[in-house]
Length: 74
Image 1: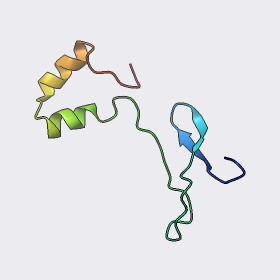
Image 2 (image 1 turned 30 degrees about the vertical axis):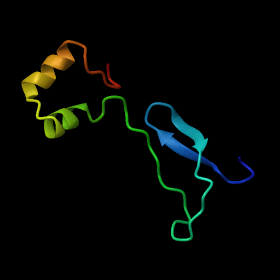
Image 3 (image 1 turned 90 degrees about the vertical axis):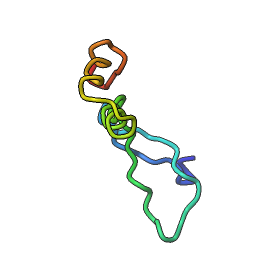
Image 4 (image 1 turned 120 degrees about the vertical axis):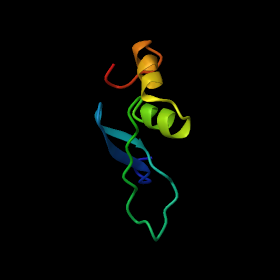
């Protein structure tokens, strides 16, 4: 994979530099690999619950307090 150029190094906020498989497909309009970063655990919980599912701040706090929602911090 390294010799074929389909290994990409990405920066992870927790693990630092990590090598991952890159796309084996190469596009002339995108000569450089895309900057990739995995989302942190629970990074979008509040946003999704509030904006997409209509949860109130009190309901979300209740889920956090009950240990239902996790995040990279806890």
